[in-house]
Image 1 (cartoon, rainbow, N blue to C red):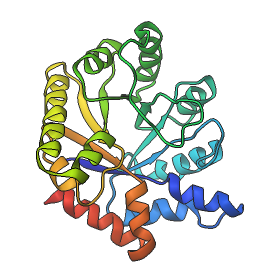
Image 2 (spheres, rainbow, N blue to C red):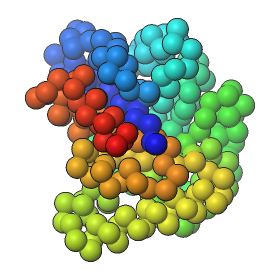
Image 3 (cartoon, rainbow, N blue to C red):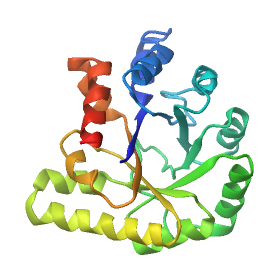
Image 4 (spheres, helix red, strand yellow):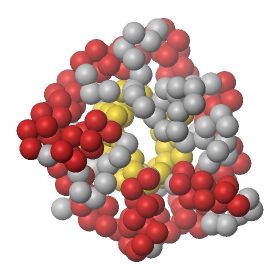
Length: 245
């Protein structure tokens, strides 16, 4: 059964639109925990347009007394200030994500022709600090092979292509899902765990939860969007119900 890590970036986006501390990010994190979420995800970007370094420290401090019962996943591009922050707070998992200039949200996984030596050094340093390392990749053979060569503990499969295919239905969604199945099986054979995220929602998750060897899904935008109508607690519980069915 795959675990749910709730991405709380969007809560910070709403807060930052007015300044101050409303809505409270820590309160949102606690609501997710109380609803049963086993993980919290944040993505502190260089421009701090939602999650800030202070947020990361505050969430880490809030989760620490739980003794690992709720995992903390910090995702981002491996720039020096990001890596320093990750080493400082020592989360359960660090997900390394490529960033394109001007992007609104992630658009693709790491290209398999990305020089692997530097990534391997970064991954090794994080693992030496007892931080599980995941790398964000597209569901293709070369990308999985690159992630394994970099020494990643897990890959996070970029699922927007699956979400778009799901909207069209029919053969398109089946062909897309089969591609993710092949990627998951390849990663598992290489000893690499499987996470997934991006545009997963209550509808497409019903199929995607059947992905072989799926360890974790990270969901933020759809979950928080639903929370606007039903409340954050009910939204988290709805996603957990899908994953647990």
